[in-house]
Image 1 (cartoon, rainbow, N blue to C red):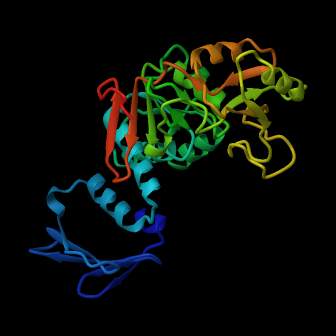
Image 2: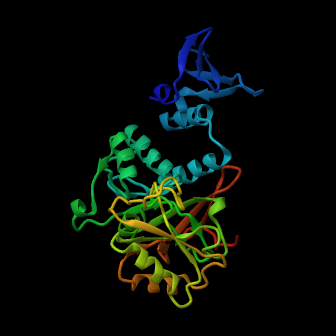
Image 3: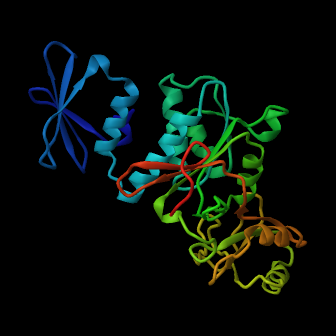
Length: 323
């Protein structure tokens, strides 16, 4: 599977050479058939890595291959670390798992699929928060359901990213255009684990990332005018165009359309949001607003991936936010 994923070719030369356009790794078996493998990268000066096949799990071996053959930027490496950690620590057999949307949540979905394929997770039911995530989950042969199909059964844990996180663990979400489904599933979850990279941390919501508001298409310009004139709401509203999954997208002239056939208005706060809870209440009361991207007091735990690829946990089971 990894060979297909990374376009690897294999050639025998006193062992095996696995290579793609980025890197070649020499695999050599020593000390008896399939007991030890010496893996050496040819693209960088590096001491050989000795892997004891007898005591190395399939998951550990695949993780090593992922780290070698996937060419990721430091920020993508950090996102993957957060996604993998959340699944490793919070997803157990026989759970109903909410699968988030976005570039960091992508890796959590990937990890669930990997562990299900290897038999390390069993009887997992997955509830995706967007059509994009549903397609990814289906491609990984996961058991995909909706909240309706769950019936009275709760979502045991939801894992999703965020576009901004403040010191009280309030979030802005919706850069990927999936805020309505995300909020429905995460409100229904017994535990919501937020996964972000270090660039998403802020002391005040608003300046670093606009606040998405999903609105009905009918008279959306009228709704924009209302948003611009709410007392105490000092912001600039912009209709998202082109692709709903691209925040402040200007990829087309027509308003973007969400999975729910609505539009998104992004509110730009130059000076930040002083009281996220109050703003959330104000937005909720506007006729024409379907949902907003403020997720206040919802995430029990936030896992932050740092520049060096390590992760630190805040909130329940972790540290008090101090960035």
